[in-house]
Length: 229
Image (cartoon, rainbow, N blue to C red):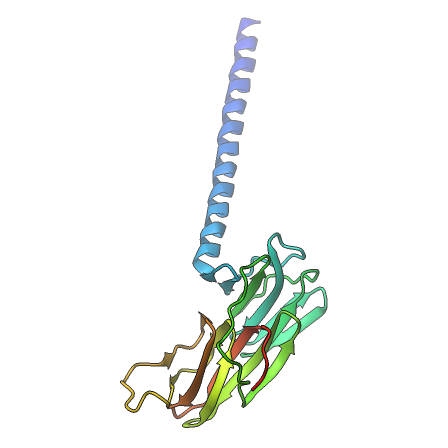
């Protein structure tokens, strides 16, 4: 009887130890997976300011009504197919898909930026005057912002024009300058690095494309009150 009791106690103790080790293993694995996901998201964040968050090749605002975020934009850096609440959307490099706050999409696979607009952001700044930029093509517009293809042929000039606060998605490597001030342009200055983004403040300027290939950017620009000159 004593021998049988000892065997049962030993078996129970061994089982509890095995369960504890198994739970520890799976908890550690889950913790490591969560930590890896957090690190991946952190590594994928290329811009975060009071107005928006931009992720590269990672999406964190795919659900509808994501806390503190409203409209989101996917800007494709390559061929992309996105499953969404609106159906499957196919994009090519330089194309965009806009998702309102109540719309959803699955995590895309491929090369892209996810731009998520923050709610309750600070008041927008405005340029000192407004001159509408020419030679661009608007591909989306609502009350909050507009998206346009910013294009300029080699050696061409975009005359004096204005911009509000905006995100620039750079697609081609070109060299730009403001021809009003730059008589001699230093090598390596004004370079647009492909597959990068820049949040730019309001400006009134002119632009010349010094390169032998066209300028091609996607510009997501906040809309501000203004009177066109």
